[in-house]
Image (cartoon, rainbow, N blue to C red; front, side):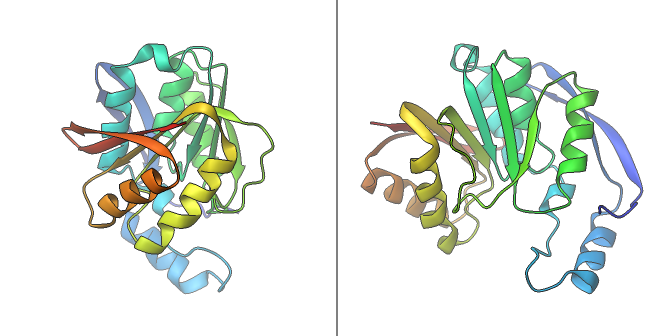
Length: 208
């Protein structure tokens, strides 16, 4: 169960879209809790409790291309607070699923989806071992490759869940593994295109 940490509700405006997001008031307090109580099988770092800048870059990129989302099946990986998933739902996606490996993530995402009148299904899942049979037209994610070993499982999962001709959109603040992620995607047969946004970089991978 998600511990009862004090929360705050903030208003985020990204590319002219207004969102209300509930998040923990003190990230360090939450981090200390998980370090002290989590067992070895549970991800200890509560990334879900914080809004990361690359998610803003991703939503900005999405908002500039509304035709990519209307009527599409969309999956967000490593969703955290779920800002891109909520944005996709508000831009007309016909199905949105947001997943994260942290078992306490879901309650924050569901609250935030409700606050923003968005229908988003929440799933606890390791993207390297997909638990979904549906193929998605769009897969999105932000801040997913902050360590090099994360790249191969990420693209393995994406390759399994992305429909032919589908697009995987990855946002990142520009960490060193990003270039390696681009090279890995290209080697797997994706076509990639890089874009610069105010809060980071966005790479569009198209499954050929």
